[in-house]
Structures are given as C-alpha cells and as structure tokens.
Image 1: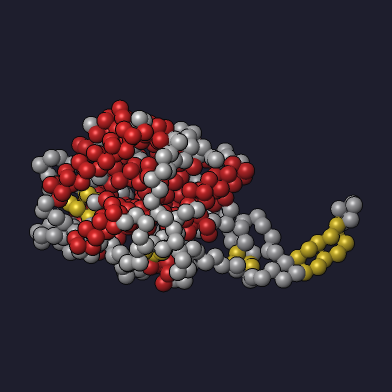
Image 2 (image 1 turned 180 degrees about the vertical axis):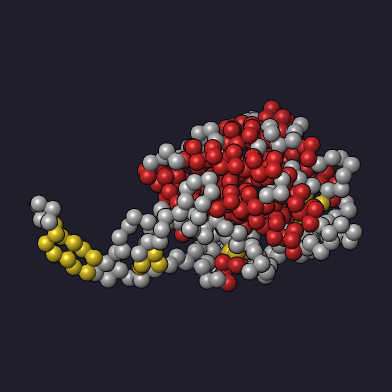
Length: 389
C-alpha cells in the first residue's frame, strides 16, 4: 500500500464535492441580495466556496495531510469531508452527505479508470486544483493558499518513480473496489452499466511514450530488425497525444478531473445503489485508533469561527422532499440489508430551522460515535477532543 495516496484522494474528492455544491447553489441562485426567502444568493455561494477552500488548503491542514501515512477507510474519509463542508455556513444532513459522498467516489473512480498512465493521476489532481483556483480567484488570500499547496504537491510527487505511481494507483483501485453506485449522468452517457460497473473503451489514443499496438518486430542477436508481423488488436488505437503539463500552470491536455457538472449538464444528477453490493461496512477496523488519531489531527485546523452563532445557517438537502430524506434515514437505521432502487435528486434549499436540526443531528452523530468507540475502547479521548472543535 502506498503511503502517498491520502493527499491525492482528499484533494480529488474535495474537488468533486466543490463541483457538486457549486452546481447546486448556482441552480438555485436567482437572488443577488438574498431578498427572496429560500434561495441561495451569489454572495452565499462565493462565501461557501471561500470558506471550504480556505480550510481545505490551510497550511496546518495540508502539512499534516502530506505526511507519509496509510490510506484509511471510507467512513473516516467521509467524516473528514463532512467536517470540511461544515466549516462554511452550509449544513448537510447524514443522508444527504451519504449521497454526496457516493457521487464524489464514483466520479473520481471513473477518472482513475480512464487514466492512461499511473503518473497521469497527477494531471487529474491538477485539473481539480486548477478549477478550485477559479472558484476563489476573487479572494487573494485563499488563492495564495491554493497555489502554495499546489507547489507542495509538485515537490512531493515529482520525485516519485514509475513503480511508486503504479503502487499508488493500485492502492486507489483497492479503495474503490467495493463501490458500484449507479450515477444517472454516467448511465445516460453509456459509460456505466446497470450493475454499476464502468464500460471502458478499447479504442482511442495510447498513453504518452507508448507505441500503437498491432505490430510484432523480430530482432537478431545484433539488434537488427529482421522481420515484422501484424496482429489484430481488437480495438482502434491511435498515436498518443502530447503530454500534459505537470507545472504549477499549464495545459494539462487531459480533461479528466474537470468539472462535469457544468452548464452543459443542466439535468439532475442521480445516484442509486446496486442490489448486490453492500455499501455500509460496520465491521471493526484494525486501524481504528490510527484513523481517529489522523482525524483528530486533521480536524485541529477546522475551527468553527467561520460560522458565527448569531448568523443564519443554511441547509443543503440532496433529496426532493423531507419525506424522501426520512425514508432514507429509516432504511439506513433499520434496513441495512435492503436494496435501494430509487433515484435520488440533488436539491439545494434553505431552512429556517436549520440551526435546531443541525444541533439534533450533531448530537446524535456524536452520541453514536461515542457508543461505537466505547465498545472497542479506542480513541475516546480523541473523539472528545473533536467534539470541542
């Protein structure tokens, strides 16, 4: 397992989260001065982006994240990203965060599958960083944080060998192997099968530095070519396109990692679980204590000062109605083994009672986490530390 995987997973999943939130907030942005109740203003959207990106790329946070360490479970990663999202004026309920996390995972998984070379994982990450940079281009302080983090990423990963990049890719594939959530956008574009698995093409340009397959050349003992023979490849391959830039700024060439929730995709994006794959894994984790240690260290820089107590807090609901949300939460708590065929719509909304609901949800979350870790006698002090943040 590669000890350099965690930073790329966090940056790419965080980028996908920002794409989705930005698209939903823009879809409901029809009021510049927030004069219309129930709508997100452009000011709200920019503030959410700046708050989340500012925390995500803070120096303390990134210094801790870039330390060599093992990649942890989906549960820990989702908890980190949930806390990250809640550093803004926006709040996500647990059911909506589950759906958001599934979209993030499947988008990044698809990008990794299509990545021509292991090293090109960096180009995916740089595309995410470049787009995030556009989100905060009007805020110099946050923009400088993004640039500084990008420089650190280049410094850390530019020296890795091809073998280390291959190990990093293998670690990512292991991380993704049990996730087969159907996404309506992928299904519509016919890049995902009904069982949730991706349909990969056997045609197109080969990776940079690789010859087009279909030719066998034979050489003698002196290195001279003596014969050639062709064979069917089963696909239509073309010469490689030029290599993308691995610098701070430049043409990445690859489109993997760019925002797919743009104006070109105005339709709703849905997710639905496949009936044969169990998404929730509640088995004890041998690295539970280490995960909690990581979580506590990472959360140390995510302070609540971004959301004053007297200020209105906005709630994001990724379901059409509150009834759908309640049904999903009931299934999650009482029917973990049941199949879910419903299609979930991403929606953005405000709620006047968001502060009260958030307090109840946070209390239930904290209580559940404490009970879970009391049974394993691991990390009690760290959870208490996190509750104080």
